[in-house]
Length: 508
Ligand code: HEM
Image 1: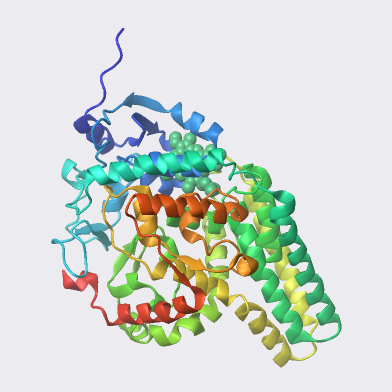
Image 2: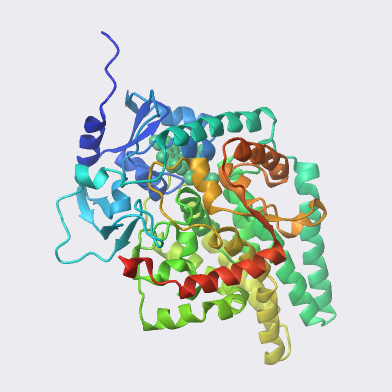
């Protein structure tokens, strides 16, 4: 028997329309079984956002070697990627289509841009609440066709090839190796010192000092939880997750499961107004540019209303920026517990089973026990409230930094033709800071490199970012970076600029 002929674009499209989740990896067509969608450790949306697309760079960035071999076992054929590579389709989920009980369901209506304008590129597809007249039968070939784009497929293929070469340089330089002693040793010493000094201050009844130190402890711990959530420390899912549950849930009161789920989606559709949950977090819609029109969030499965309340807060969002950031951690509690409640009866993931859910619930219970005991041990109500507020407000530089890392960058959707590295460099920015004080930013100031290589241990990001800068220069891509203070000036200003910009949706 000869080698089967590569599948044509039409054949791939037909199978997607028939309900198959096909993704392209190098020249292979991978069919992800429906059962795997619900149990995928990276969540179903990670896969759904790549149906019909060349997902090689994303998949190789997010999976370990053995997992990549496992993924290859789902190959059902090949495609011809000579020339400029595979011309990606628009995944059905990006047009509001999902499969439920084996049938297509239109959960939101896709609004395609009318063409290039000051406010939206021709490639932009947003989602709005579905109307009575929304189609019900399923996506069509037309739905899958990519919108017009300014992206040159030849350049995109070059970026992608250069990224693969860069990834190899990073692997060959040993930058995936975690330096436990010299890398994490000082971190662990810092966490212990902050916790111990906070306890000592508390015992001496220096409550505000204790609250500040506790806030600093949480602030620093977040970075460790972040690395563990990316399986970037031991590179073993179970070990990293157990450590992360201890740090995030028991010490910090936040769900690591919630964080990993939405954070991975954020990494894959960075800054997309309707698909990136990280720019939709703040119930204080004011900060987020996505609320400039009533849109549908494919992650939260709800309409983000552009109502009178939202309009008012958008008009003053630049004034509220720091106030909202001061209390951002409370919002993370809400998101964490809602996530765990929603996932109580969901099918167990392929890695982690149900134990992760129970461990999180138990550790969160223990967090509430120890933190409320701390508060109740303070004699006056006024001081208790001050302790609660100060310990949370001290963590706010973290939230400001994360917001700056993405909100100051483009939220345009340039369509599936844009390469993974080009998209990450366009939507992400570094905060410049000296190595001596970079522990304050926890490695996340090197956000661009982190986004290109999410599983890299944080202490190797600086070395990797030198290679990324060379890559960006050679490929004519902007590597954006600014100082933290400079970013503060630009950050709230850019938020203000957005408040004054008309809705992208309204412009259409
Ligand atoms: C048949 C297809 C797939 C299989 C078998 C698979 C398997 C896995 C496994 C076993 C993990 C746990 C981490 C690891 O062992 O490396 C994982 C995590 C993940 N996968 Fe997949 N995956 C598939 C497709 C995809 C696709 C198409 C994407 C999108 C680009 C994706 C994105 C992710 C993400 C974001 C994570 C989380 C990584 C992290 O926690 O840092 N996966 N996947």
